[in-house]
Length: 192
Image (cartoon, rainbow, N blue to C red; front, side, top):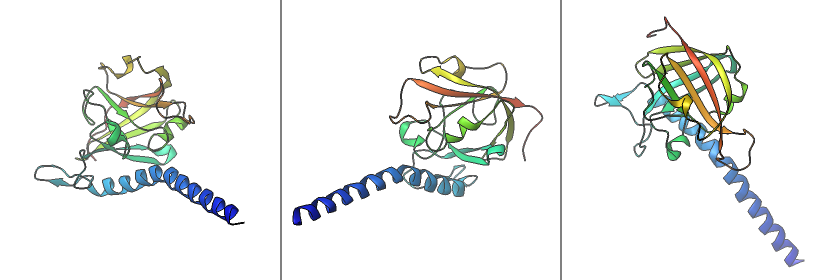
């Protein structure tokens, strides 16, 4: 009887640990977005405000998908550590609000989960901390191999490229395939 009770307690404890671990990543993603929303648009000493003192990135832009009621604060880095808190700007790509190809990467199971629901013609909006807003329309979405970086290069037109891992429901993180959404800028949109 005691052995059975000890086994049940051990299994319940292990289950609670696994549940807490599974909820930690989504909870951290939601909390980080709330802190970054607060820091978005605030400046310290002429620069962007960090969402918390030890953050090694700053809120860079706000990405919206109006039809899906999706919104995320984009961070200034696309390192693995930064992507845990929000989609990140890929270094070397055009800055949000600037001309060229703005490339953003995000996790498929948190901030970029909505990408699977985007369709050609859907509106996207990217707003910088300074209020410069660029409207985009989804032109293409598809699956590419991680080595196929052609869509990440410079562009003759103003585009927004969103990248996440694929498949969306994979159990293992990473993998060699990427889901990419390319949206073209609608000109004539400026500061709010």
